[in-house]
Length: 310
Ligand code: UDP
Image (cartoon, rainbow, N blue to C red):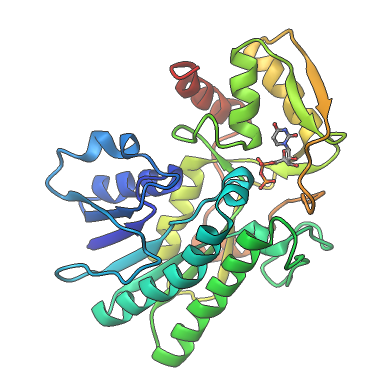
């Protein structure tokens, strides 16, 4: 296959490029490097089946030659990033999705959208199945990301229904692993960075809010299987093992042997979901997929990666 990965210099995008390369495919990574980093694919650059185009997919996209698949992973994705770049976030979710869909139609390529658990907002149904329509504040601080991704899903389904485009939608739940940016503001790099520096871990609010953390390899496997399955409605890919942010902080301190403890700070962003846990029945049934890497092993690999950077 000849595959275009937008956001190919990002955390998830670069892992995805790596997977296609290891499967023997040809990969074009596209990224405007707003939040991505070319160091994430430095190890692929000598491979003749890999190439990189620096381009903002919110603008018209041109790619020479045939394409078999387009995976649209470009977007700021951490709350700090999309608060810093609200308009770029809206544009890449809306215009970037439109442009990549147009390219897929022109090339007759299969299309996969990276959507998100954020489309469920601060959920009133728990855990969240794909049939839950969500609870999002359109004008809240997270609305720029949540609504862009909701619009993107609608656009993908419109191309599927109107142009018979061969599309997929993956709803990605909290994912962590090597190549996250240490300063992206998310809880995993924040806590690991603080723990490795021997600092207190900063819990926003009272720490009772929950998340379910998935290791990046599990996500990539799920995305790869979905791309090769014949299914067009959204599929949740995430790890259902849910914990409170307080429990997560204690766990990070335990495995890093950080004696500095925790501190409570008032930095919760309005609309920060109180709970989040994927219902993965659909992925299990359709893809025979389930997470394989437990939190301890996944965190250990992530800590090893961050240790070099702190
Ligand atoms: N959080 C925290 N301390 C931090 C960073 C984040 O307590 O240093 C909390 C944040 O308020 C949220 C959860 O951890 O409830 C997950 O935040 P993250 O930014 O990783 O992603 P989200 O799941 O909110 O998109």
